[in-house]
Length: 560
Image 1 (cartoon, rainbow, N blue to C red):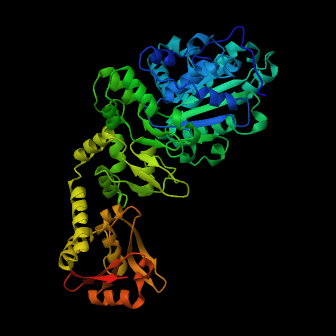
Image 2: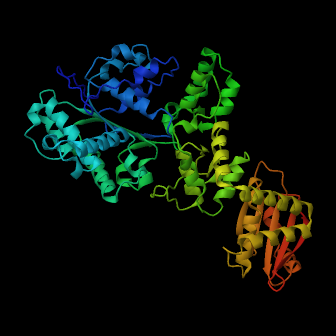
Image 3: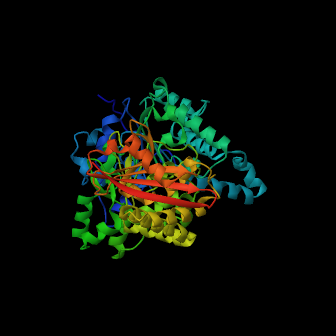
């Protein structure tokens, strides 16, 4: 059974140690409140155990700070909060009173601390000479040094016996736990845990912060003073390459919410209840703010936008109130292969598949299209539906986020991207109709658009152009390049998705030969045998003549 600690008789209230946190109380008083206190039932199960390290990351507006405030209010021994929680769902839990206000809480809001540090630097800059002598030399500190100084000062005031102890913050906490009569344990709550990474702080400052987290929360033998660690932010720990630290945490995020999904947004049942209570049309609420989806939870809504719509009695885009245009623009305007076409498809209402398991360690510098898309999932711009052992299915979640994409692409002039998708749709339709001349002409046009970036001198480079040309075919097909058919490799292999009624296609490419020779190769090697379950297969031969700088196409139908 978990060890229980009695509250301190003279509990200290500071900025970091047992702070007076009124966020939960203020939200409850707005009249638009969803009770997520069952989250405390989850944390109570792991408190003072080997599973006590939790990191829950999600986008802005999804209740991160409210959850952190609730945890701090519930565990902090600085005040009796029984009245605050007595009518919430957690009050019915068997362990409710066991842990209520029984621990010292160290609450670190990295974003707020950063602002406080800037204010301290500004105060030092404008202080009189006498005042400067009395103030710490903030100018020589980093943000982390400032935070540790503030916490240690409050610990010294709360536990006078530790004033002569030296060492790291973790060492001081261990000393307090061992030497104080009550052997107090501490609950750490860190909000905006990844702030230093996202604001691209100097490398040395990031390194110091990583070392701080590792020294504080790694090593079971050095953590007797810890009861619980709850971190929240936007990106998961593994995003920053901190595998050794991530191994100590149970992580929950927008790609893998696992058992925390119901606490990471408003569920459909909760939104239906709010709409009934406040006389708001549920269907319109769903159109605007639904769209996120978690296994075992189903539909998940953006909490901030739902609350604002009820308070303002109007359905509109509330996303832009706390997020800058540059945030989305900086991601979707990057020059990653196929990224803009993918975004355009998503804006048309299509779903696309992506590998969301990998995240580049460089914030703002993704390495691939899928990396960009995964970051957009964590930022709340895309819905992610993940199935075991399969690539994730992504889509734009709702009308509010679609409005963000439309605003951003209009500002950046994406007209050429949308035109290229229209061309790709037309190319696919002409292929299905067997219009070889139209296909050859369209491929020539697309080739002319991409010759500046693609070295066009062999069948492989021709294949690259064709992959771009048939970009929208991804809606209907799984497309394989150099697919092994048993008797050779087909250049492009279009296999219909299970839900598609499209005819399968094999596209064979030639460079400085003939389109007919491409068709004959497909027939001779019977590439179509892998598609024998379909009644017919389109055989498409395309040749590029470098002398005339033109493409030739031939299309035939093979019947199985």
